[in-house]
Structure formats: C-alpha cells, structure tokens
Image 1 (cartoon, rainbow, N blue to C red):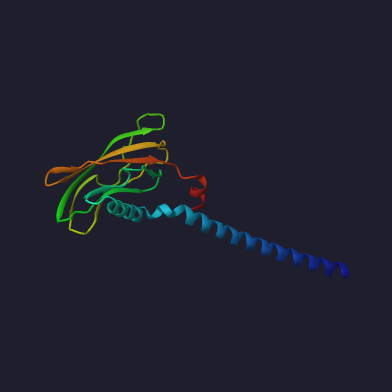
Image 2: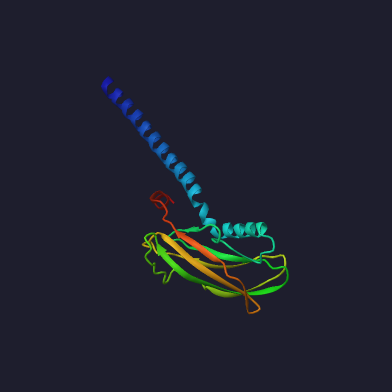
Length: 186
C-alpha cells in the first residue's frame, strides 16, 4: 500500500513540473517573439517613416521644393517586401508637378546587371497638385523577388513644373536580405 501512495505522489509531482515547464516555455516563446518582432518590424511603417524623413529633409534644406529619400544615404530594400520609395513636394505657392521615376542602373555586388523587370508595382509617372504649406508625396512600391541578388539600384527622378525640369535627383536603393531569424519569427 505504501508503494502505491509514493508512486501516486511521484506522478502528481511529475505532472505539475511538466505543466509548469510547458507554461514557462510558451510564455518564454511569446515574450521572445514579441520583443524580436517589435524590434525587427520597425521597417513595417515604411511609408510613415519615409514621410517623416522627407519632412525632416525639408526642414534641413530650406527653399528646396523637391526632396527625395535615398539621395544622400542609400535606402535598404528587402526582397519579397513592398518597399515604398518616393519624393516629396513642398511649394510656396499652388503648383502642379509632373514626375517620372526611371531605373537607370541596377548592378549586383560584383558589377553584373540586375534585371528589374516586374519589380515596380505602381506607376512611375504622375502628376501632383500641391498647395502652399502642404507636402504631397510621389511614391512607388518596389518589390524585388526573393532570389534578387544583393546590390545597388540607381533611380533618377525628373520633376517638371510648367513643362520645365526643376529637379532631377538620383536615388540609391540597396538590396539587403532580412536575416533568417526575422523571416522565421515574424
């Protein structure tokens, strides 16, 4: 009789320990996933980040009507993600802008040309009418395929006002892979 009671107590202790271990494992995984995804998914607010960056550039460069991201520092883009790229217009008077984005160069790290056919998911040309004191954005989404080689893409922008070119900045995009941890966890 004593042996059976001891065996029962042992099994209850074992069950409690296993249940506590599973609960702790689940809580640990949720905690790690929350922290890792929160840290790695900062880039999911790409458009908002691009808008604030353009507003910051407008603040630094007084008198500039057109400012584009990726002009001073290359912007990292991730394959298989929609990466929003663009320029902002901030006139002093009501103005209509005509813009055109053109991929002029796409080379991988070794200098080989990259075929960018089908990467752009939105129109590369358009017209924006912007009032004074406001900022409007000309954007497009670029989505490199998963097998895209890492490298640099150069995009030239031509902005016209009244049929005359007023700006032609060159944007640089750097194709950069997300780590396996970010891809698997988030």
